[in-house]
Length: 318
Image 1 (tube, helix red, strand yellow):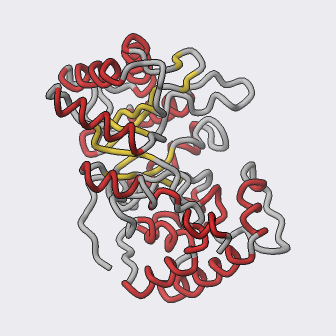
Image 2 (cartoon, rainbow, N blue to C red):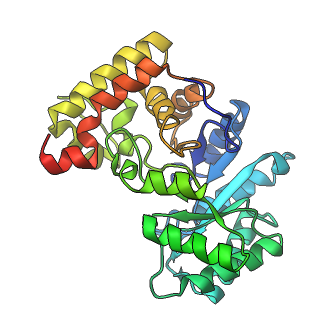
Image 3 (spheres, rainbow, N blue to C red):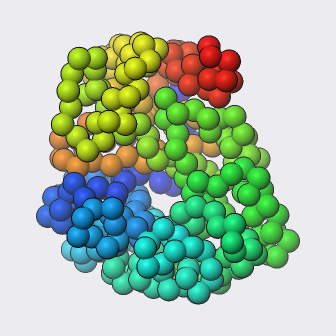
């Protein structure tokens, strides 16, 4: 099933593991290997990885920034980061956005970010205010595109109306939780994005590792995400989904993670999935999705095998 090429490539590398399960040296090797495999887009956030003992937030940006200083291809790379959740830079007030961006640029050691997200909506700040300052930062050359992560469809619509009425830079990218076992996106958000001309870059593309293939009935996995990923095994229909993925993956000679990521690119408005790797071996499995297109029949088989994860099916108990 051929698709139009994405400006973000076929895969965006998630930076949430940098400063958490991957230190600077390993992070640099992972980033180099990703680019060597044809990747160009890297996603992070100012809050990554504040949840780790001893961290304060910004560690991921610092690792990416130190890596960028070793590269000569900055203009060929797309670097995305986010504002809202850093412990010392909470929310979307105009002053906070400006301060947070300056902090991110310093840590990333760059003069601009290619994509800057509101990490989530902020009901305490009028949309006109935060959209206004984001537009100003675009005109100043510090941001190239504006993104919205974890926004409800209605708030994306109001943001589009505000930017159109004020001749402001529009939101052009969304980032939300979407994968084969989390398909609520397709009910309201996907049609809204398509209508507004916003592209989706999904996170949690492999459902905390469940769709990597390492989680199977009766198998224990040593991972910080094992609890969340392993919970999917409680539904036998998710186990059956793994069997469909296994069959399609065998036909392509890849692991199931590459198939799950390729399926995501078939979703409405999706440009490229985001996935992270904490080892070079994990990255090698992920980048197999680059250039891998599923047939119409394969997409249909995965649609059917994961249909129980659609909102309508969940509400009826199907």
